[in-house]
Image (cartoon, rainbow, N blue to C red; front, side):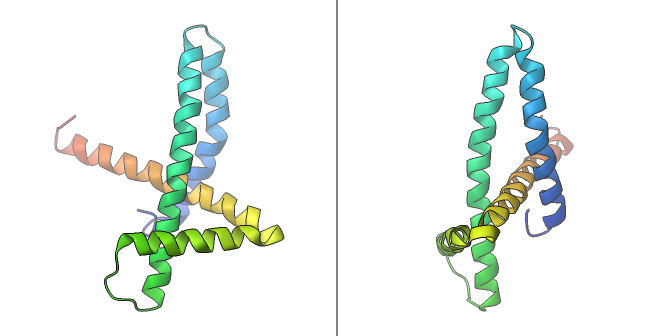
Length: 127
């Protein structure tokens, strides 16, 4: 999903990152919403961590594509992406900026993929 809609993923991830604190506050105001607010924060943390994995696979796949590597296993794309991700983190100013952009792209891509699955299931009248 990230390959096809890179800029939409970036924008969606940025909006989601800004929206979660407001959602947390809105839910935490009521007594009934407090448990829901903490569930939102925990789920957001899990999704943000998983999003990093998708971005690393995307980066590794892109590198493998540019080097004209024939059919490789997805694990190699993940390994290459993780190495590049961590190497970028070492660079003083660019590191945190790259991680932030990767966060936005990964989170947005994951949310857009979830939306795509939901809409396709809805079109088939399975949900």
